[in-house]
Picture 1 (tube, helix red, strand yellow):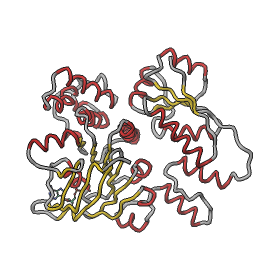
Picture 2 (picture 1 turned 180 degrees about the vertical axis):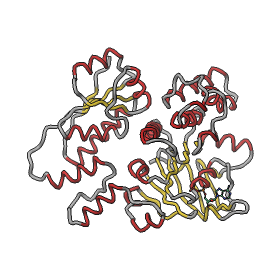
Picture 3 (picture 1 turned 90 degrees about the vertical axis):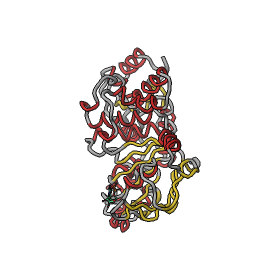
Picture 4 (picture 1 turned 120 degrees about the vertical axis):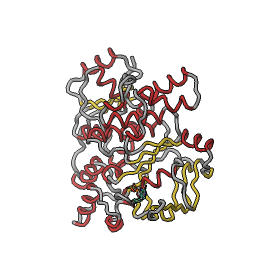
Length: 388
Ligand code: ADP
């Protein structure tokens, strides 16, 4: 893990004429981490996040970005806000311009970039969030999920080091939430650090590298999700619930089932744990293959030709560009979230699959399958679709 990028040291904040919302908080976030600040309504999540982009100033304590204390003069704040992208819970608070293009261009234009560079930054940001073609649309006519993407694109156009998102999936339907979490996964794979707040434990549990449990303006615990959410007493104290998979794991253990020690983060982990107990001594099964295709390097002919030769294969896409490509070619996706795990589950049942993706995500598939192989002993073949 990288060096510390964000840090709070004994920070306190009281709203004018209000109660103390943040009561002596210390923690840090490292470069390249995905951290979730988890707590019930009123815990102080928004207040804490707003301090990291200088919108609120602590009464005492120190906040540091990139190891420098945050300063509050205009020039320092502009620089901070360029490097720390902040996505509000309510996109209507963020989106201000009459068209998507103008909205996303707002930040880079304010930086004084020449028109050509502004255009390039907007194009790249819209491509990243899967909204190419939306440039002329008025933001108020978009769906909640699309608005959220416009807000994220506006932040990405500044090429920040760190993205802070306050309740990124609030008001989104399940598919919209999955899309946003997948987008965050992709941004992390591209080197961004991601810090979110949420009260949704099921969302934070499989996603975060680390969670910080917050209640009443204080940190209750800070650890890997399986440890933090595994502390049932604390979780209840925080008025949260234990993630279902963890609850099930604990329940099975209480009933004397000797499961592998590693706590399951995903359905795949859980299936693997149960299979390891139930399949001892059984003959080794035949696994399906996971094919991976980098859509940036495979032409339409190549992809459709490959699919016509592999009838009945399950199809998944990871990342916005890959999903866009699937949609452009009229392909129906079987999986669009948690794709690698779902393809591993298929492979365990002897079924093959194809994952459409881009760039560094190809290696991510290989890494995840190798890690699973080491844990489970299941030798699932991964093959890259040849470039055309
Ligand atoms: P969360 O994001 O976890 O729901 P908040 O940071 O919004 O929590 O709120 C933390 C506490 O601060 C709550 O008790 C809330 O009522 C209070 N609070 C939030 N905003 C204001 C405000 N503008 N003025 C006074 N009190 C506020």
